[in-house]
Image 1 (cartoon, rainbow, N blue to C red):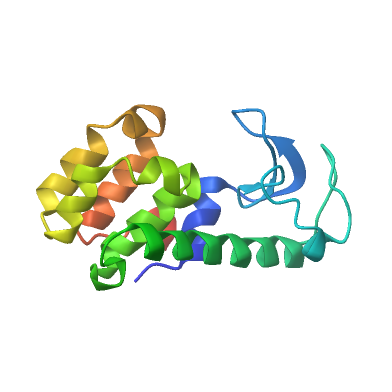
Image 2: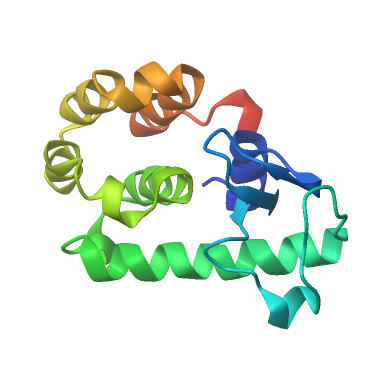
Length: 154
């Protein structure tokens, strides 16, 4: 369906230099939070603001983050593995952005996914604070809910 690396690279951006995100969190790669996970085992050093990492390190961090996200979804979303792929992709994207603790507050939207209620999913996505903060991303998620892969992910 969707290449998760390509999708999240577009939505999160790829940064070789460590930077402060919109909340002031030291971040690098594809949205990797260095405060929550300094990733010493991968990076073999402390990363400070402006420090560079390699493309290989970015991919390794991404793979770990993706594993963390999918593990959290399996643990916290009832019957996650039974959801349609398009909903799994949406949840991975949203969780990558906001974390599992904020994502699970989308109870109605998740319930609509579990019921395969596309209209309810779209209304939940586009009617949320998430959509007002990230309108383009929310629109792309609503396209995925409709079964359309946004051109940015191709």
